[in-house]
Amino acid sequence: MLTLGMIYEAQKRLKDVARVTPLNPAPAIGENVYIKSENLQLTGSFKLRGAYNKISSLTAEEKSKGVIACSAGNHAQGVALSATKNGIKSVICMPAGAPIAKVEATKGYGAEVVLVDGVYDDAAREAERLTQEHGYTFAHPFNDEYVMAGQGTIALEIIQQLPEVEQIVVPIGGGGLISGVAFTIKQLKPECKVIGVQAATVPSMYESRKNGQITTVPDGNTIADGIHVLTPGNLTFEMVQKYVDEVVTVTEDEICAAILALLEKSKTVAEGAGATPVAACLYGKVDMTKKTVCVVSGGNVDVTTLSRILTKGLIKTGRIAEIKTKVVDKPGQLNHLLQIIADTGANIMSVDHKREDKEAEVNVCVVSMVLETRNTEHVAQIHEALKNSGYMLLGE
Image 1 (tube, helix red, strand yellow):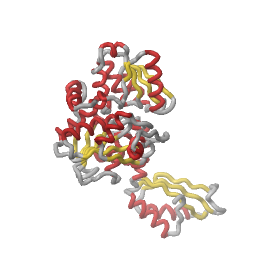
Image 2 (cartoon, rainbow, N blue to C red):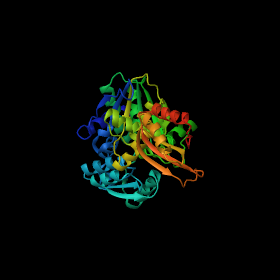
Image 3 (cartoon, helix red, strand yellow):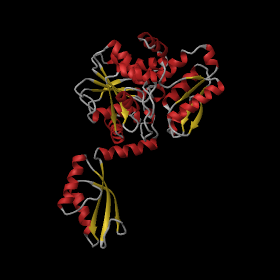
Image 4 (cartoon, rainbow, N blue to C red):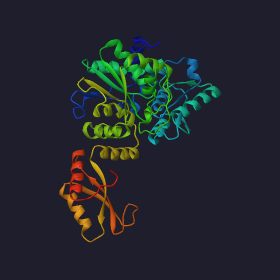
């Protein structure tokens, strides 16, 4: 059973290992919003806290067997580093689609990595099989009280850094982070609300709360790989039911826009899971009148993936617009169209002019453009200008 004493004991264990991460105001996100930057934690995410606390609490016999874990990447790095610091062998089962940066970092911290086809739940089954076969000690990424206690140390720091906090917004995958944070907050500052955020495509804890029982959701695609969990843990579900005030969901486009906002406005690099609390704030999923801390849980994102995410974010926020229309196939018609675009102040990034298009009649061309724009209002002005000039927008 998790106790407040276990949280304080975890804080002592982590004193010379984990960083006390900064908590700074983020006025560009919201007037009352603060960012708890766990992306600046050693290994790039909060997971080190729970992993180190768990491994440090093992008996000598358990340590001698070596540890095994399953993870999409962040818990993997935490366990690998913690095991290496304790002189223990570590084996990590990871989904084959885990970000390359997380896989390579896990190897770099000293772990043997086993890539498993499928998602986190498939990696978990393989870890269970290997545990039975080799007798390893299993370090669960979330459904473990020592792991929750380690994550709960974040709440101790938040209370010290911002005593007047009224609301904490936390990502949820399996539920270990929010369990530790919510339990600790409700013991020390029960009036403070705790809100969980999940990806709308994989809302396992959201659906479990709604159904009043642990629910496995169908697999969905999400850029928030760190919270891509199809079934919550039984321990974490119980904690969330008891201590969490609300669970909300955010879309993929909202997550992309949040990553962009954090990078551009707060100079913070966040992975998909880490950006979900900010997405919830930006898109009206939580009460923004309260003094709110968003736990940016990690920043381990591949540069190539980040590039694609930022493009999606620019589209979502109206900084890039894709427009498709038709022009008569006569000299000067394309120039007329482009002049209208130029007059609106948009910058044309690319133009594709096709005569042979399934949407084009005889003597008509389809023109596709990518524009650099200011915001969604600017995009709406461009659409209006084109319609007023007689152009039909395709794909609306």
